[in-house]
Amino acid sequence: MEENRLSNIFPKENDIPEKFLLKNLIEQNEYLIDGKICSWDGSHQDVFSPVCLNVDGELKQKLLGHYPLLTEKEALTALDSAVSAYDNGRGCWPTMSVTERIKCLENFIGCMKDVRDDVVNLLMWEIGKSYADSAKEFDRTIEYIGDTIPALKELDRTSAKFVIEQGVVGQIRRAPLGVVLCMGPYNYPLNETFTTLIPALIMGNTVIFKPPKLGVLLHRPLLKAFKDSFPKGVINTVYGEGQTVIAPLMASGKIDALAFIGSSKVANILQKQHPKPHRCRFVLGLEAKNASIVLSDADLDLVIKEHILGTLSYNGQRCTALKILFVHSEIIDSFLNKFTEAVDNLSIGMPWKDGVYLTPLPEANKISYLSELVEDAKEYGAKIVNKKGGLNSKTFFYPAILYPVNSKMRIYSEEQFGPVIPVISFKDTEQPIKYIIDSNYGQQVSIFGNDSDTIADLIDPLVNQVCRVNINSQCQRGPDTFPFTGRKDSAEGTLSVSDALKVFSIRSLVATKDIAHNKKIFDDIVKNRKSNFLSTDYIL
Ligand code: G3H
Image (cartoon, rainbow, N blue to C red; front, side):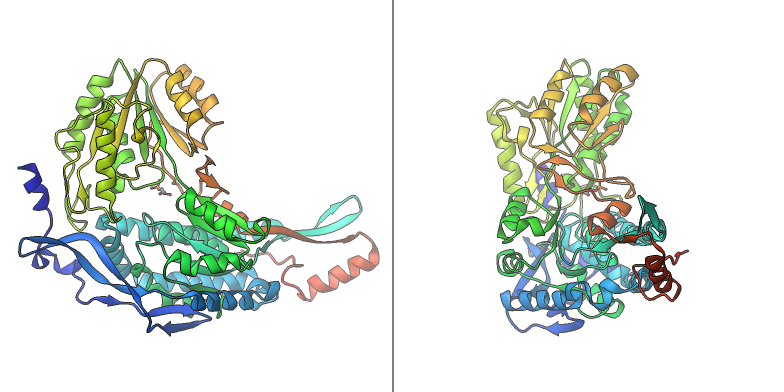
């Protein structure tokens, strides 16, 4: 009965609201290299939506279009273009004044806003994110880019002065690293890609950008915006299989920084491919298994609200999602009652449906992976405690709350990245602390409770295990001005609006002995604006 209801969630072609219809297949042949939008006539990768359509009673993932499967040759052409635009730091982009670079970025923001509707619609279709959250992702990205500009001005202003120490005069600024390869994740294909790509660009690096495996076509409307806003070669795109297009880039030894958000397994492979890894800066956002610790005096209504957000926003496909719940034994029953009810009442459906919370999942084989996790947990003694938990149809999986979970189960330590919610009851807070210490991951934790003594006792050990302790709130990345990072296998490098500018640059300085002759040379360069680096120009 319920299963039937699930298969009915998929629409027929003519049930799709007019506003969200994709009238034609998106046959992307374009890619951007060296300031030119090139046309590809080789093989392509078909793109299917996680949204299935009911065609004469049969459910089929909707075909959205295709993108180019470039080869090593095009990847190396993109590399040559980025290397030559950087020109060992002598290119027009790395030597351009910050004011000029900001103008290019402002132009880009304008062009990006013009294609908002197309990008948001594709984001929704390609990764199954609700329309509201897809729009939020777009707007958050625009805001992030906008906030980057004042952050950069501030960074530049603090560098627009000379420092005199021990008879040495110096001007210390931040200089670019070189060629940056940017690769984002499928769950935030726009936002998380741009939170590395934009800071990398604006600091004067040249960039090669590969969209994630899922969430590719949505970048197509932005190719022209990139082309029209930045000098040639400053931004280049590659499309295709990682092994074909990324491995040769890394093996060339010419990538100076890699921004990668994905799995630690892939990050390790990429790191090893670089012949001189110490020459490449790695900025990595990897797995996480964020825990929540619900103390006996926690406000249960707030706990439920934050746990719905924490475990199931975008179906739990967030690196910051709450992926294991430790609930005090005194309140475990009332927690499970309220939580299961709240989960089973969530709105399911297609991403365009108003107020929809649970939508189809885009990753291939995800439903069988999640089902395996559930079966494995059941084998070791867990039960699915919510009525509809684990029901599935094609690409849709109903969230399964598993209880009681123990260390023998895969779900105890594996990052599920989807709607399976393991719950453990505890009597002593030592148990969740020990879990976090033993975990391979160290991104964030959430603590729910009301007693400040108990909370304080948890804060002090936990800030040294993870990089953000959230009190009475789910785990999250935002606000984007806050540092976002992790320990162990969760991250390398710190991102935030201002940290990202630092992570894609290096401190470089011009110094001289503080004597009259040298001062005269400095004076002449500064007064006559002979250098963009050695300069006291103040950007307002
Ligand atoms: O997938 C990881 C994202 O950075 C999480 O960001 O906490 O704002 O959803 P969020």
